[in-house]
Image (cartoon, rainbow, N blue to C red; front, top):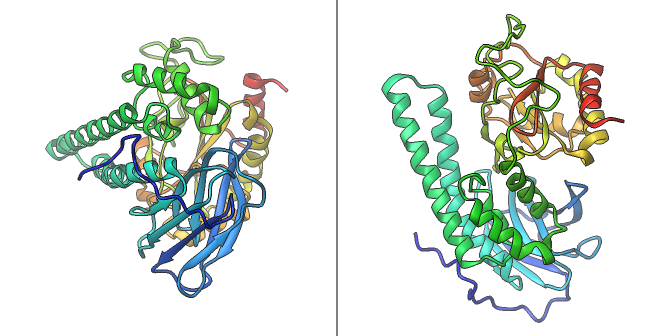
Length: 389
Protein backbone atom coordinates (compact mmCIF):
# COMPACT_ATOMS: atom_id res chain seq x y z
CA UNK A 1 0.00 0.00 0.00
CA UNK A 2 1.38 3.39 -0.96
CA UNK A 3 0.91 6.15 1.60
CA UNK A 4 1.42 9.84 0.93
CA UNK A 5 2.44 11.26 4.27
CA UNK A 6 4.53 14.31 3.41
CA UNK A 7 3.84 17.85 4.53
CA UNK A 8 3.21 18.85 0.91
CA UNK A 9 -0.14 17.01 0.81
CA UNK A 10 -2.46 19.07 -1.40
CA UNK A 11 -5.84 19.75 0.19
CA UNK A 12 -8.63 21.51 -1.65
CA UNK A 13 -10.18 24.24 0.48
CA UNK A 14 -13.96 24.61 0.66
CA UNK A 15 -14.43 28.38 0.51
CA UNK A 16 -18.22 28.23 0.42
CA UNK A 17 -18.80 26.93 3.97
CA UNK A 18 -18.97 29.22 7.02
CA UNK A 19 -15.86 29.13 9.17
CA UNK A 20 -16.06 26.42 11.82
CA UNK A 21 -18.83 24.48 10.07
CA UNK A 22 -18.31 20.73 9.59
CA UNK A 23 -20.07 19.32 6.54
CA UNK A 24 -19.96 16.07 4.67
CA UNK A 25 -21.65 13.11 3.07
CA UNK A 26 -21.82 9.56 4.37
CA UNK A 27 -23.02 6.85 2.02
CA UNK A 28 -24.28 3.54 3.34
CA UNK A 29 -26.38 5.12 6.13
CA UNK A 30 -30.10 5.75 6.49
CA UNK A 31 -31.72 9.16 6.57
CA UNK A 32 -31.65 10.54 10.11
CA UNK A 33 -28.43 8.77 11.11
CA UNK A 34 -26.91 10.51 14.10
CA UNK A 35 -23.62 12.38 13.66
CA UNK A 36 -21.99 13.41 16.93
CA UNK A 37 -18.93 15.62 17.48
CA UNK A 38 -16.84 14.89 20.57
CA UNK A 39 -13.99 16.94 22.05
CA UNK A 40 -11.74 16.70 25.08
CA UNK A 41 -12.78 18.45 28.29
CA UNK A 42 -10.80 17.77 31.46
CA UNK A 43 -9.14 14.79 29.74
CA UNK A 44 -12.50 13.19 28.90
CA UNK A 45 -14.25 13.24 25.52
CA UNK A 46 -17.66 14.89 25.72
CA UNK A 47 -20.31 15.71 23.12
CA UNK A 48 -19.78 19.15 21.60
CA UNK A 49 -22.17 18.99 18.66
CA UNK A 50 -24.90 16.83 17.11
CA UNK A 51 -26.84 16.57 13.87
CA UNK A 52 -28.47 13.99 11.57
CA UNK A 53 -27.99 13.01 7.93
CA UNK A 54 -30.35 13.96 5.12
CA UNK A 55 -31.83 11.44 2.68
CA UNK A 56 -28.72 11.58 0.48
CA UNK A 57 -26.35 11.17 3.45
CA UNK A 58 -25.27 14.81 3.64
CA UNK A 59 -25.01 16.66 6.94
CA UNK A 60 -24.04 19.99 8.45
CA UNK A 61 -22.77 20.33 12.00
CA UNK A 62 -21.89 23.57 13.77
CA UNK A 63 -20.10 22.91 17.09
CA UNK A 64 -21.83 24.16 20.24
CA UNK A 65 -18.78 26.34 20.90
CA UNK A 66 -15.78 27.33 18.74
CA UNK A 67 -13.25 24.49 18.58
CA UNK A 68 -9.64 24.84 19.66
CA UNK A 69 -6.99 23.18 17.47
CA UNK A 70 -6.85 19.70 18.95
CA UNK A 71 -7.96 16.14 18.41
CA UNK A 72 -11.75 15.83 18.00
CA UNK A 73 -13.91 12.91 16.95
CA UNK A 74 -16.93 12.41 14.72
CA UNK A 75 -19.16 9.43 15.53
CA UNK A 76 -21.74 8.01 13.10
CA UNK A 77 -24.59 6.21 14.89
CA UNK A 78 -22.24 5.73 17.87
CA UNK A 79 -20.39 3.01 15.94
CA UNK A 80 -17.95 4.57 13.49
CA UNK A 81 -15.38 7.03 14.88
CA UNK A 82 -13.13 9.22 12.78
CA UNK A 83 -10.52 11.61 14.19
CA UNK A 84 -10.42 15.29 13.24
CA UNK A 85 -7.55 17.73 13.75
CA UNK A 86 -9.25 21.08 13.36
CA UNK A 87 -10.42 24.30 14.99
CA UNK A 88 -12.99 27.04 14.44
CA UNK A 89 -10.87 28.74 11.75
CA UNK A 90 -11.33 25.82 9.34
CA UNK A 91 -14.36 24.74 7.31
CA UNK A 92 -13.99 20.97 7.18
CA UNK A 93 -15.75 18.60 4.78
CA UNK A 94 -15.79 14.79 5.10
CA UNK A 95 -16.87 12.21 2.55
CA UNK A 96 -16.89 8.49 3.29
CA UNK A 97 -18.72 5.22 2.86
CA UNK A 98 -19.90 3.74 6.17
CA UNK A 99 -19.64 -0.08 6.23
CA UNK A 100 -21.98 -2.38 8.15
CA UNK A 101 -19.07 -3.65 10.25
CA UNK A 102 -18.36 -1.59 13.36
CA UNK A 103 -15.04 0.08 13.84
CA UNK A 104 -12.91 3.05 12.90
CA UNK A 105 -14.00 4.66 9.64
CA UNK A 106 -11.27 4.27 7.02
CA UNK A 107 -11.11 5.60 3.49
CA UNK A 108 -12.53 9.03 4.36
CA UNK A 109 -11.75 12.04 2.15
CA UNK A 110 -11.17 15.42 3.81
CA UNK A 111 -11.06 18.96 2.49
CA UNK A 112 -10.60 22.21 4.37
CA UNK A 113 -8.33 20.72 7.07
CA UNK A 114 -4.79 19.72 6.02
CA UNK A 115 -3.90 18.02 9.31
CA UNK A 116 -7.13 15.97 9.27
CA UNK A 117 -6.37 14.85 5.70
CA UNK A 118 -2.82 13.76 6.62
CA UNK A 119 -4.01 11.89 9.67
CA UNK A 120 -6.74 10.16 7.65
CA UNK A 121 -4.12 8.81 5.22
CA UNK A 122 -2.07 7.57 8.17
CA UNK A 123 -5.04 5.89 9.87
CA UNK A 124 -6.01 4.14 6.64
CA UNK A 125 -2.71 2.26 6.92
CA UNK A 126 -2.45 1.58 10.65
CA UNK A 127 -6.06 0.61 11.43
CA UNK A 128 -5.89 -2.65 9.39
CA UNK A 129 -2.52 -3.40 11.02
CA UNK A 130 -3.94 -2.77 14.50
CA UNK A 131 -6.97 -4.93 13.77
CA UNK A 132 -4.67 -7.75 12.69
CA UNK A 133 -2.55 -7.32 15.82
CA UNK A 134 -5.62 -7.49 18.06
CA UNK A 135 -6.80 -10.67 16.33
CA UNK A 136 -3.38 -12.33 16.54
CA UNK A 137 -2.95 -11.39 20.21
CA UNK A 138 -6.30 -13.00 21.03
CA UNK A 139 -5.17 -16.19 19.29
CA UNK A 140 -1.77 -15.98 21.00
CA UNK A 141 -3.37 -15.74 24.47
CA UNK A 142 -5.42 -18.91 23.86
CA UNK A 143 -2.74 -21.02 22.13
CA UNK A 144 0.06 -23.28 23.32
CA UNK A 145 3.31 -24.80 22.12
CA UNK A 146 4.47 -24.26 18.54
CA UNK A 147 1.23 -22.48 17.65
CA UNK A 148 1.84 -20.01 20.45
CA UNK A 149 5.37 -19.33 19.17
CA UNK A 150 4.04 -18.80 15.64
CA UNK A 151 1.52 -16.24 16.84
CA UNK A 152 4.23 -14.54 18.88
CA UNK A 153 6.36 -14.16 15.75
CA UNK A 154 3.42 -12.66 13.87
CA UNK A 155 2.82 -10.17 16.71
CA UNK A 156 6.47 -9.10 16.66
CA UNK A 157 6.30 -8.62 12.89
CA UNK A 158 3.12 -6.52 13.07
CA UNK A 159 4.48 -4.37 15.89
CA UNK A 160 7.63 -3.77 13.84
CA UNK A 161 5.51 -2.74 10.85
CA UNK A 162 3.46 -0.34 12.98
CA UNK A 163 6.66 1.18 14.34
CA UNK A 164 8.07 1.59 10.84
CA UNK A 165 4.93 3.34 9.56
CA UNK A 166 4.88 5.62 12.62
CA UNK A 167 8.54 6.62 12.25
CA UNK A 168 8.11 7.31 8.55
CA UNK A 169 5.11 9.53 9.18
CA UNK A 170 6.89 11.49 11.91
CA UNK A 171 9.93 12.02 9.70
CA UNK A 172 7.69 13.52 7.01
CA UNK A 173 5.54 15.60 9.41
CA UNK A 174 7.62 16.47 12.51
CA UNK A 175 5.87 19.78 13.19
CA UNK A 176 2.30 18.73 12.43
CA UNK A 177 -0.19 17.91 15.17
CA UNK A 178 -0.97 14.61 13.43
CA UNK A 179 2.47 13.30 14.44
CA UNK A 180 1.20 12.89 18.00
CA UNK A 181 -0.98 10.04 16.74
CA UNK A 182 2.09 8.38 15.24
CA UNK A 183 3.84 8.54 18.62
CA UNK A 184 1.18 6.18 19.97
CA UNK A 185 2.67 3.46 17.77
CA UNK A 186 6.11 3.83 19.34
CA UNK A 187 7.78 2.79 22.58
CA UNK A 188 9.29 5.95 24.14
CA UNK A 189 12.14 3.90 25.60
CA UNK A 190 13.15 2.66 22.14
CA UNK A 191 12.16 5.67 20.01
CA UNK A 192 13.05 8.38 22.48
CA UNK A 193 14.68 10.57 19.82
CA UNK A 194 11.43 10.74 17.82
CA UNK A 195 9.42 11.58 20.92
CA UNK A 196 11.89 14.29 21.91
CA UNK A 197 11.85 15.89 18.45
CA UNK A 198 8.06 15.92 18.03
CA UNK A 199 7.42 17.17 21.57
CA UNK A 200 9.99 19.93 21.08
CA UNK A 201 8.53 21.02 17.72
CA UNK A 202 4.93 21.06 18.97
CA UNK A 203 5.40 22.40 22.50
CA UNK A 204 4.83 26.08 21.78
CA UNK A 205 1.78 25.62 19.57
CA UNK A 206 0.11 22.48 20.92
CA UNK A 207 1.63 21.92 24.37
CA UNK A 208 -1.73 22.71 25.99
CA UNK A 209 -3.64 19.94 24.18
CA UNK A 210 -4.78 16.69 25.78
CA UNK A 211 -2.96 14.49 23.27
CA UNK A 212 0.33 16.38 23.60
CA UNK A 213 0.24 16.08 27.40
CA UNK A 214 -0.54 12.37 27.20
CA UNK A 215 2.40 11.60 24.90
CA UNK A 216 4.73 13.83 26.92
CA UNK A 217 3.71 11.91 30.04
CA UNK A 218 4.63 8.63 28.31
CA UNK A 219 8.01 10.06 27.33
CA UNK A 220 8.73 11.52 30.78
CA UNK A 221 7.81 8.27 32.49
CA UNK A 222 10.13 6.31 30.20
CA UNK A 223 13.04 8.50 31.31
CA UNK A 224 12.43 7.82 35.00
CA UNK A 225 13.65 4.83 37.02
CA UNK A 226 11.00 2.24 37.86
CA UNK A 227 9.59 2.88 41.33
CA UNK A 228 6.47 1.34 42.83
CA UNK A 229 4.45 4.11 44.55
CA UNK A 230 4.06 3.47 48.28
CA UNK A 231 5.49 -0.03 47.97
CA UNK A 232 8.92 -1.49 48.77
CA UNK A 233 11.01 -2.65 45.80
CA UNK A 234 9.83 -6.08 44.60
CA UNK A 235 11.94 -9.12 45.37
CA UNK A 236 12.35 -12.27 43.32
CA UNK A 237 9.99 -14.06 45.69
CA UNK A 238 7.75 -11.38 47.18
CA UNK A 239 5.83 -12.39 50.25
CA UNK A 240 2.31 -11.81 49.02
CA UNK A 241 -0.89 -13.21 50.41
CA UNK A 242 -2.74 -14.67 47.46
CA UNK A 243 -6.39 -15.63 47.44
CA UNK A 244 -7.66 -18.80 45.78
CA UNK A 245 -9.44 -16.75 43.12
CA UNK A 246 -7.87 -14.26 40.72
CA UNK A 247 -4.40 -15.13 41.94
CA UNK A 248 -2.23 -15.09 38.82
CA UNK A 249 -0.96 -11.52 39.37
CA UNK A 250 -0.33 -9.98 42.76
CA UNK A 251 1.12 -6.91 44.44
CA UNK A 252 4.66 -6.15 43.31
CA UNK A 253 4.33 -7.80 39.89
CA UNK A 254 4.12 -6.01 36.56
CA UNK A 255 0.67 -5.77 34.99
CA UNK A 256 0.37 -7.67 31.72
CA UNK A 257 -0.47 -5.41 28.79
CA UNK A 258 -3.98 -5.61 27.34
CA UNK A 259 -4.67 -4.76 23.69
CA UNK A 260 -8.37 -4.90 22.86
CA UNK A 261 -11.14 -2.99 21.08
CA UNK A 262 -13.54 -0.50 22.63
CA UNK A 263 -17.26 -0.43 21.69
CA UNK A 264 -16.49 1.73 18.64
CA UNK A 265 -13.70 -0.41 17.21
CA UNK A 266 -10.80 1.70 18.51
CA UNK A 267 -7.79 -0.28 19.77
CA UNK A 268 -7.09 0.48 23.42
CA UNK A 269 -3.87 -0.48 25.19
CA UNK A 270 -3.38 -0.63 28.93
CA UNK A 271 0.27 0.29 28.35
CA UNK A 272 -0.80 3.63 26.82
CA UNK A 273 -1.74 4.73 30.34
CA UNK A 274 1.82 4.41 31.69
CA UNK A 275 2.58 7.50 33.71
CA UNK A 276 -0.81 7.44 35.40
CA UNK A 277 -2.29 5.48 38.28
CA UNK A 278 -4.78 3.04 36.70
CA UNK A 279 -7.61 0.97 38.10
CA UNK A 280 -7.89 -2.20 35.99
CA UNK A 281 -11.50 -3.25 36.45
CA UNK A 282 -12.90 -6.61 35.29
CA UNK A 283 -16.71 -6.49 35.20
CA UNK A 284 -19.82 -7.24 33.09
CA UNK A 285 -23.26 -5.75 32.54
CA UNK A 286 -24.91 -8.96 33.81
CA UNK A 287 -22.90 -9.00 37.05
CA UNK A 288 -25.00 -7.56 39.89
CA UNK A 289 -22.10 -7.04 42.33
CA UNK A 290 -20.17 -5.30 39.52
CA UNK A 291 -23.02 -2.88 38.88
CA UNK A 292 -23.27 -2.14 42.60
CA UNK A 293 -19.53 -1.37 42.68
CA UNK A 294 -19.69 1.00 39.71
CA UNK A 295 -20.85 4.08 41.72
CA UNK A 296 -17.72 3.76 43.89
CA UNK A 297 -15.51 3.64 40.80
CA UNK A 298 -17.30 6.62 39.23
CA UNK A 299 -16.90 8.64 42.43
CA UNK A 300 -13.19 7.85 42.63
CA UNK A 301 -12.68 8.71 38.96
CA UNK A 302 -14.42 12.06 39.24
CA UNK A 303 -12.43 12.91 42.38
CA UNK A 304 -8.94 11.96 41.17
CA UNK A 305 -8.96 12.11 37.34
CA UNK A 306 -7.40 15.57 37.45
CA UNK A 307 -4.47 14.18 39.44
CA UNK A 308 -3.52 11.42 37.02
CA UNK A 309 -6.01 8.64 37.82
CA UNK A 310 -7.55 6.55 35.02
CA UNK A 311 -9.83 3.52 34.78
CA UNK A 312 -9.34 0.69 32.27
CA UNK A 313 -12.50 -1.43 32.20
CA UNK A 314 -12.49 -4.95 30.75
CA UNK A 315 -16.00 -6.31 30.17
CA UNK A 316 -16.79 -10.02 30.20
CA UNK A 317 -19.92 -9.37 28.17
CA UNK A 318 -20.93 -11.23 25.03
CA UNK A 319 -23.80 -8.90 24.04
CA UNK A 320 -22.47 -5.56 22.78
CA UNK A 321 -25.75 -3.67 23.16
CA UNK A 322 -26.13 -4.70 26.82
CA UNK A 323 -22.49 -3.74 27.47
CA UNK A 324 -22.90 -0.28 25.94
CA UNK A 325 -26.23 0.26 27.70
CA UNK A 326 -24.66 -0.56 31.09
CA UNK A 327 -21.82 1.91 30.41
CA UNK A 328 -24.37 4.64 29.75
CA UNK A 329 -26.73 3.72 32.59
CA UNK A 330 -23.96 3.59 35.20
CA UNK A 331 -22.28 6.79 33.99
CA UNK A 332 -18.91 5.16 33.23
CA UNK A 333 -17.61 8.23 31.41
CA UNK A 334 -13.95 7.24 30.92
CA UNK A 335 -12.78 6.28 27.43
CA UNK A 336 -11.02 3.01 28.18
CA UNK A 337 -13.72 0.35 27.89
CA UNK A 338 -12.68 -2.87 26.11
CA UNK A 339 -14.10 -6.31 25.40
CA UNK A 340 -13.73 -9.08 22.84
CA UNK A 341 -17.36 -10.09 23.54
CA UNK A 342 -16.31 -13.64 24.45
CA UNK A 343 -17.84 -13.69 27.93
CA UNK A 344 -15.82 -15.80 30.35
CA UNK A 345 -13.52 -16.67 27.43
CA UNK A 346 -12.34 -13.05 27.32
CA UNK A 347 -8.65 -13.16 26.37
CA UNK A 348 -7.56 -10.59 28.96
CA UNK A 349 -9.41 -12.25 31.83
CA UNK A 350 -7.90 -15.63 30.90
CA UNK A 351 -4.41 -14.14 30.72
CA UNK A 352 -4.89 -12.61 34.19
CA UNK A 353 -6.42 -15.78 35.64
CA UNK A 354 -9.71 -14.08 36.50
CA UNK A 355 -12.25 -16.56 37.85
CA UNK A 356 -14.69 -14.19 39.57
CA UNK A 357 -15.88 -10.62 39.09
CA UNK A 358 -15.87 -7.84 40.01
CA UNK A 359 -12.11 -7.82 40.31
CA UNK A 360 -9.86 -4.77 40.38
CA UNK A 361 -6.15 -4.10 40.35
CA UNK A 362 -4.62 -0.71 41.12
CA UNK A 363 -1.58 -0.18 38.89
CA UNK A 364 1.16 2.38 39.57
CA UNK A 365 2.62 4.87 37.15
CA UNK A 366 5.37 2.41 36.28
CA UNK A 367 2.99 -0.43 35.43
CA UNK A 368 3.48 -2.37 38.67
CA UNK A 369 0.50 -3.62 40.68
CA UNK A 370 0.02 -1.64 43.90
CA UNK A 371 -3.06 -3.37 45.32
CA UNK A 372 -5.78 -5.84 44.33
CA UNK A 373 -9.35 -6.77 45.34
CA UNK A 374 -10.36 -3.17 46.05
CA UNK A 375 -14.07 -2.90 46.80
CA UNK A 376 -16.22 0.00 47.99
CA UNK A 377 -14.43 2.45 50.28
CA UNK A 378 -11.19 0.46 50.01
CA UNK A 379 -10.49 1.96 46.57
CA UNK A 380 -10.75 5.55 47.72
CA UNK A 381 -8.71 4.80 50.84
CA UNK A 382 -5.90 3.50 48.61
CA UNK A 383 -6.12 6.50 46.28
CA UNK A 384 -6.03 8.80 49.29
CA UNK A 385 -2.61 7.37 50.16
CA UNK A 386 -1.36 8.19 46.66
CA UNK A 387 -2.97 11.54 45.96
CA UNK A 388 -4.00 12.97 49.32
CA UNK A 389 -7.30 14.81 49.83
